[in-house]
Image (cartoon, rainbow, N blue to C red; front, side, top):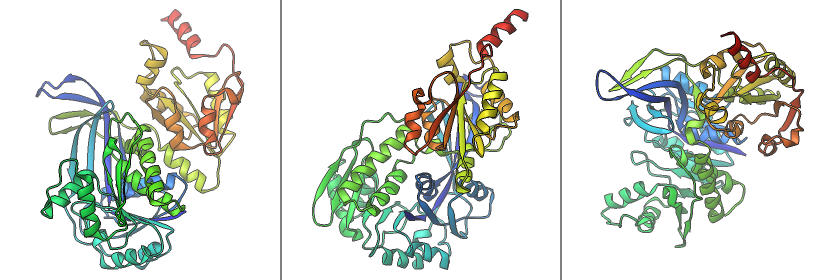
Length: 466
């Protein structure tokens, strides 16, 4: 499907690490940084998710010429970016996490900006779309009069989903559905002099229907699902699947993108909204927006307002972007995975055989915490940074992606390899990854197991000479 995303792009930075001690300078935790990753946020996140789903995506936005914009262009590789020039720096949101728990967020350059210019290419992308998502983050792109006129015209022919922002522009009249969250809906109603109850989603939603002139309003309510209100007076409550979520970042973007896709596929509003809520829940269960981040360059130690951040640097190229690039060229993406604690000849032979099956080889590598859960407290012997560096030193390995779960399932869902390779004496159908790859037509392959070559055997031999 040809989908055009219109809206403001942000740069999201994720600083992930562990805290085991307090700083001697102040009673604040010291965060030992495991990695720093950057990703496109706002409309960029919507475009990224839709592109990973296999749609042809055009992103109508504004990009500056600063360092943040260069990171955004890298994160948006493979997406057709049609950008005007804003008169403001790239807005950046930096999140610090300890394990899976968000600790603090720093916002830079996120104030409202002047309205950016538009181009003929932007207007053409809106006119030719089969579905449109507007991701308004209050940075001005939706205030451009030419873009607003193009959106109003497109809404007469194709589904237009508008995800609003309190500091943004009003949706153009006639859009298919507007998707405020409950807090936004209540605030808008109160600003108009209404006094809806804390849970008054229906009253607030009906106010927004009258105010915006859309065909429907979908008020999202987090773990409580959503409430769909149509211009014909109907109201439908949509429950959300039970999901364990540590960070809800990106749920609204995933929902808006999915809603546009399902409407563009011919589903009615209720069916599309139900599926979009399910998609948003599944997105969060798979790691949410943080799972889409791309690695940063190695950097120095940083201290941010009482948080001492010690950065050991990034060692692996971006496997997810590499996979997208190889697929775009019509190539075959091969992946394999494991702990690779003590690299030995058996590993090298398996990796070389895997690389010969396609145009790139991406290794899914268990993090230190994942190895400890699988192998015991005495493992890993070699840290994840050193394991990644050793793997990348092999000519047959093109990229390493580190994952913290017990299985590589989430990692595979983002890389979507054509072939998954494992060494062993079992059949490909016995591999637990076979079910995952079948979802996109991938296949599992096994290569011969090499007896007497194992990490455990090598560790035991080393123990005798230590």
